[in-house]
Image (cartoon, rainbow, N blue to C red):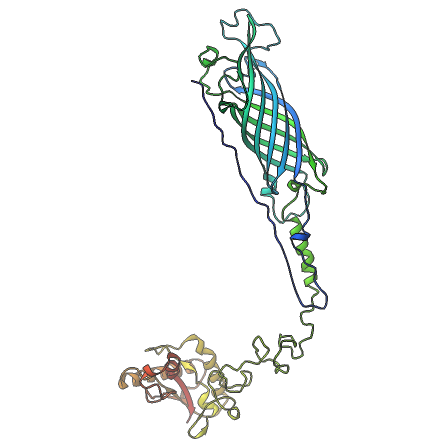
Length: 470
């Protein structure tokens, strides 16, 4: 039965990489911008034409058979449109003639050729097809290569309509066996292959192609209808052939380069390099930065920030506990206190001595006596202070208001003892330190009894260890 082949055309589209870079800065020298309006333009239209040799190999009658090498001819012409750096379309017209069989139709047939099925065939064909064109070289190029290139590999695939006249010759003469008119449903065909292009100039390329043409018809080789003896030589369901061609492509348009010969990122990288060179010369602060705090004077709300002080985005020195003493000068950064006591709190007897606050801030998790790692800097500071003095000290532990009095008394003693052991293990004489557990009777925030009356940060502050001079 005559086979009918419907070939779907390949439609693969890889959009071009297109970028827009814009930069706006207030500087002493303006920076040029790169946008889509300034991106280079490329040619996208071209025409291609060429010729070659078709070889019928997947058929009952073949071009290379029984020692014979029968050569036909082919030619093509196409109008090409590049849709991106990597994909385009071709509307192509093909014309040619294949030669196949046991001898050339120009030669005399051997005796009893028909009886031995040793016949010759030739097929004249015309075809129109729409091909997808994938620029594999641009698709797979390294993005960090900025140099031009002159070789490119392309892949092609598509479908169209095929018209042909197939002839057969034996000792009785030559006659037309099959004729197919174009633009019929059963005249569909497909072809796919690859090409290697060389860029001769910006206007012209030379290309070698190898295409595989699927005729979709078992009568294409001239063997006769589907019931003929010739078409039963083998089990082929359609007659297909290779078509090797050499051709030229002429690029059309007023621009210098064709889009298929340009790396999509080349100009982007070039413009980025130029911008980076300009950025290196930017004067970041037009008005200067008088106090060297990293905030330009135009936006700085505190123009005389002390050297070394941390600042916010407006150039104001940080004061975490908002007690009026900036962190640079605050001896108790997280606890508010008066200016005259260096930002540390006071008690009922007046100012709190440095010895009483040296360990303030050693806090613990709920129901735990493990010293948290973030307490190590405070403990190390206390070690230095104790070793530089001549006095003795009491390490005092306290808890929050949760739990029973007995439980909290024991927990506070364990916390104080752990701190004592840390100090001893790191060089403090044990004879200079003793411990005291105050349980929940030594709240830093007395209003947090019961604990449910206060936020968790206040309860955590109540779970602490400090030390005082004896």
